[in-house]
Length: 131
Image 1: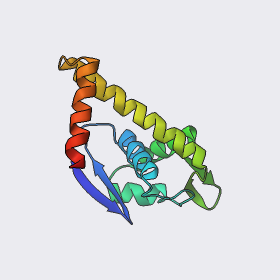
Image 2 (image 1 turned 90 degrees about the horizontal axis):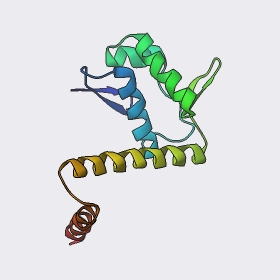
Image 3 (image 1 turned 120 degrees about the horizontal axis):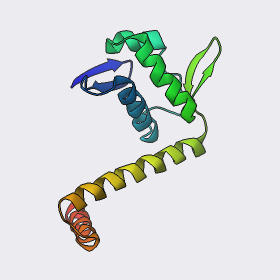
Image 4 (image 1 turned 90 degrees about the vertical axis):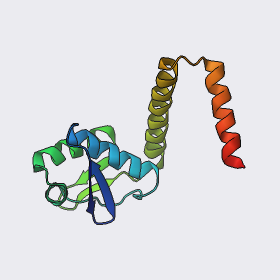
C-alpha cells in the first residue's frame, strides 16, 4: 500500500483493489471526519491522477460516482466541490457507520460470538479505554 499526498489530502492506494473505489472511500472518510470542509474545492481530475500515478479515467470514474451520490458537485468552469449540505454529509456518515457495524457484527458472528457476548466485549473495551 502506497501513501501519496495531494495538497493537504493523503491517499493510501492499494493497487490490488479498484483504485476508483478507494478514491471515493477516502474522500468520503475525509469529509465525514471533517478533514475536508463542506463546499471545499477538490483537486482537478488531471491533478489527482498525476499525484496518484493513475489514469485520468480512473479519477473521472471516482468523481462521477461521488457526484452521483451527492458528495460532490461540479461547477462548469470552476471545478469540483464537496457538497455544502450538512444533511448530505450526515446521511453519508450514518451510512458509513451502518456498513462498519454490519461488517463488525459479521466478523464477530464468524468468530462464534453471540449478540450478548459482543455487547459485553464492547462494554469491557469502553470501560478499559475510559480508565
